[in-house]
Each structure stands twice: as C-alpha cells, then as structure tokens.
Length: 231
Image 1: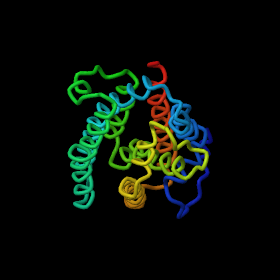
Image 2: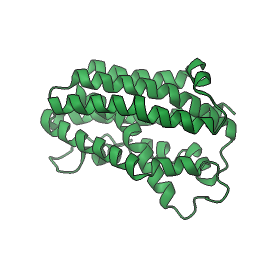
Image 3: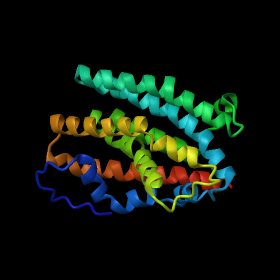
Image 4: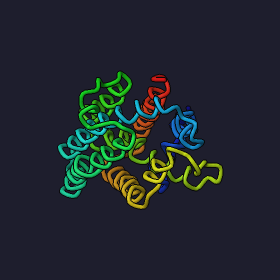
C-alpha cells in the first residue's frame, strides 16, 4: 500500500486520493474472487446465501452508523443527510433485501435469528469505533468502501462484455447495484465526503484517513471471503 505523506494541496476528489494511496487494498476488494464468481455465475450458492444473511445483519449496523453520523453532524444539512440515510436503509434497502432473499428461499425471520459472523462484527464495529473516536469525516471515510464500492463493482460488471448474462443467477444482483437509483445515491455520498473534507480537514489528516480507508477496504474483502469460507 502506498502511504506517501507528500500530498500537495489539490482539487482531486478525496475518494480518488484515498483509492490511489490504497490501490492494492482496493483492488483486492473490488476484484475479489467472490465478485469474480458473481460475474461468471460460478459462485457457489452456499457462499452467496451466507453472504445474503450476513448482509442483512450488516445493514442494521450500517443504519446505526448513519445514526451516529447524525449525532456527529455539525450542520443541519449533514444531520438531514444522515437521517435520510437511516430512513432509506431501514425502510427501503432492507425491504428490498428481504424481498430479494425470498427468491433464494431465505426468510427475514431466518436472517434475524442468524448468528453474526466474526468478520461481520469486526467490520461493523470498526466503522462504529471510527465514528465514536473521530468526527463525521472519519466516519464517512470508514463507510466509504461500502457506500461507493458496491456501485463501482456493479457498474464494472454491468459494463463488462465478459460478464455472463444468460443463466447467471447473480445477474439481478449486478443489475441492482448498477441501477441509476443506487449509483446516484453512491455518488451523493462522494459529494458529501468532499464537502465535509473541505469544511473540516487539512492536509495533516490525510495519513489518518488513508489508514481508515485501507482498513475498511480490507474488511470489505474479508466480508467477501467470509462467504467463500462458508462453502
């Protein structure tokens, strides 16, 4: 991982700077064998089912993280953004997830009763810890690999001619995360990140933000691996 501390003042979006500094960690996440299995349609069903159950539990803590973002907000706009994120996750995204899982024969009661995997706990608690220990910017950077990564993966797989479409059981997943609604929401996260960074950060914070982003990206890769290890 490149952790060069000599960043000049720049108008480059913060996400691009973080991704460049953590290129290996980011690539290991977005090009993980789990993702390649989704693209080719060869991912073992047991791996995907385990992932779906754990992702439901993850979304609960994702909503908690945005509730913490509301507490950490110092402006009304940031408070409203965080509150809307909690609403969308709990009322929209989780509902869509439950409906999607029904197609795989997984009920919401089953997901609620499932034990939380250690890698799920490690990731979600890391995000919450960064929010508690730091400010809104630290929390947004910890959330960033999830908030934008799925959109990047979805767009890449949807636009890649080598992605299997006929008979691929995971094509609806690709279509979900490459949809205009999802990608627009993810781009809004990037815009908020840049605004918050401009308001409350100096270049001296970059090394800490790189460490947070790197760890979150590695935990995302671990989340994929958790699915594969269940087979």
